Image 1: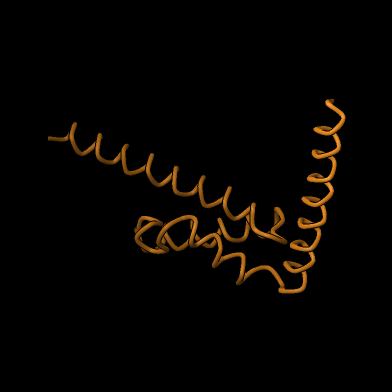
Image 2: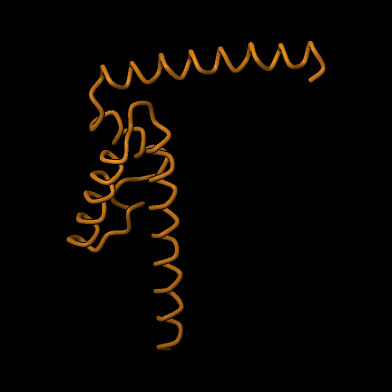
Length: 106
């Protein structure tokens, strides 16, 4: 039976690692999020889970949803808005360049 417990613990740890990895990637994709924000959020989640023994999914829900919530809480609204405008401008320029390449056959 000890072998089953080890297998269960290993699977649980792997699931925890997957949740944390997805959370970090989704958080980094949010407007205005920088390395410091990701590190702060990961530290908060890790500390909470270490203190309570909870799995991050049990404590915070889906990694994608919690990444959005954490970004809204940790990133100042003006910085997030600036990042959204910048991303929109970059997307627009990229779209124009793609159409130009398509039109010229490059």
